[in-house]
Image 1 (tube, one colour):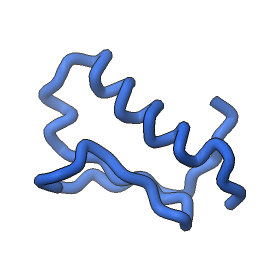
Image 2 (cartoon, rainbow, N blue to C red; image 1 turned 135 degrees about the vertical axis):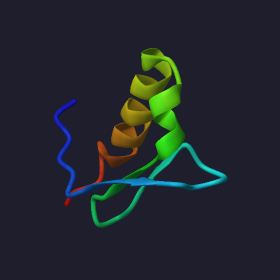
Image 3 (cartoon, rainbow, N blue to C red; image 1 turned 45 degrees about the vertical axis):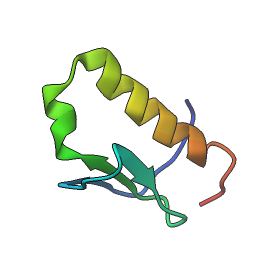
Image 4 (cartoon, rainbow, N blue to C red; image 1 turned 180 degrees about the vertical axis):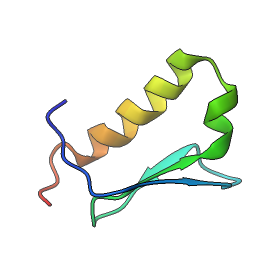
Length: 56
């Protein structure tokens, strides 16, 4: 996607599958390990898309 990011965090969040910060960090819920690969990919691509227009 041509997107840069700083760090990826895996957390035990209860309300979000993933999130991204203005600092370029991506947080993902640990339960993504239990879902089908296409769901995992969707969440990651979704979070990267938020960063597409954001300069680091």
